[in-house]
Image 1 (tube, rainbow, N blue to C red):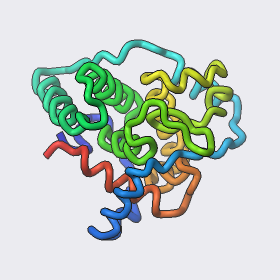
Image 2: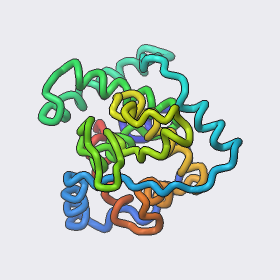
Image 3: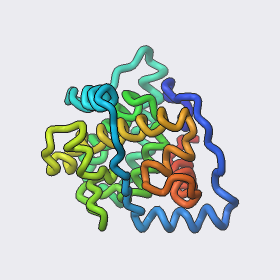
Image 4: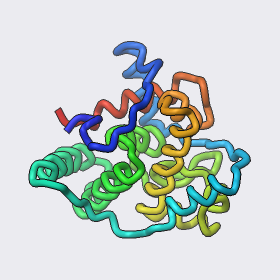
Length: 214
């Protein structure tokens, strides 16, 4: 399965992508160092806050559903190949399976490319569940604690729960992508608190390519 083959990939602009092989390798090293997210708290109208709160409130278990056998087989191939790739980072099979299943579910739920979310997690936390940045961002997708106050129940500790963290991260990225009218480059910069700068988006794009099934 390629990055855009999940059936829910929005039409987005991916401008200013990686500037060649040497830069791409450097950005991957940057990603391995876990460039922690530092989203900036911004004023939010009540309707947006309500919509985002609703988007993160359903805690249904991430059980994949498929419309046909072909879709199921694509998922199983994606799961198997990426489970092997994650082995060194997550040596316990059940943990890898739960993580990948949740990424699949939450990415599709938010209408995001699954490989994009995998690349973002690699850059943000290098797949460390309990990662905490200097700015206080938490978990796999390095969600800033203020989001729990804005659209959650205020319990920051929940950001270390796998599905909660991935749910918040995907909903927030979707929110930024909508705000940037589909411009993924700008949305990723906003997610990282570096809007308009190329380093972070390019690091995510470079990492994203590693999770594509060829």
